[in-house]
Length: 452
Image (cartoon, rainbow, N blue to C red; front, side, top):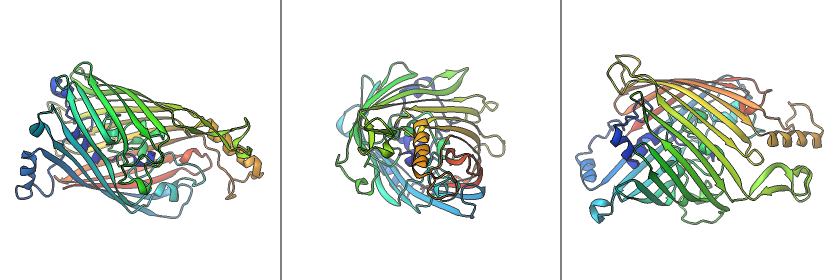
């Protein structure tokens, strides 16, 4: 679900898995867009072991991440709390072409260990009586657990223009790859495709197969068929090969462009997602009235749709250094609000890499997100209050009625040593969870990344 949003480590992981002929053909350099090469690891060459593995086609990234959030003021619960989560992530790629002769053949894998299941959003910032629509710590996955993120086979055809992938996969391997996950706030982390709530990000796998075809050196068309399994994020599915719990299939289609505009790189995408899996209506009952009072329960829809889009464009180049400059990104999602409680989400950000000559690899970022909650979801909340006769917001049995929220984040990231990144920042939450009666909140944050 949304809480499985991929982390800053995804950028390094995808660098191992995605070698884009578009980028090579036009010398597309995405460093200022946030797609940095993996930093020098703390373990170095490990007495030559890393070099031996690489010579045999095995490359990997092993990283550690922790995210700390403290409620500096406001929110639903004003009691001070420091929330802490962390994870270890191993992403690997075994080249098979040298052994089999199959063009660009490879095995791809991802294993994630998450710990300290402590989320400030639902414990302090947001009213727990409504569904969360953002997170102070984007890597919070709802569990302390070790799970398989993906294990797939991939190869290319037609002089590497067509890439085919199959296996236990995750959508981030193929789709919505244009914006990195550098911010700690979930809504600013990557694109908005996870807001469909019908597939998962980063560390949750389902069966599927995808195709990506380079129509031109800068334009790629992507599609696939993936399992829609609401149980995929459960603990008993962490290492499971089973399709138990599957409700249908997901049919994603995306077009991505990575052009050079005035000599500066950009990444753009537009995607649609259709599923034939039944989706429960947020208000309507099976008999036509309100589901909360319908003896037959809430109505189901036979299918649903979702749309996402975005861009990430470098705006300036710092003197003659292509790895320093300003970039801007925007991403949005639009859902079927009959069954998705987040109707529309819009996120914009500015990033600058190397603002100071003395710190050419430091980052500074600022982002804002507007979230509009489903009218159908709000309608059901009002009806539940009508049934109970409760109108007092402070009554624990009251059902808050969500509308819209506006969240912002500012961060500064620096690298004191090559293998360590420290990213302090601050978040501001206006109408947390979309509830106007919840006091606006300030959150102080610190993200730490170690590369092994």
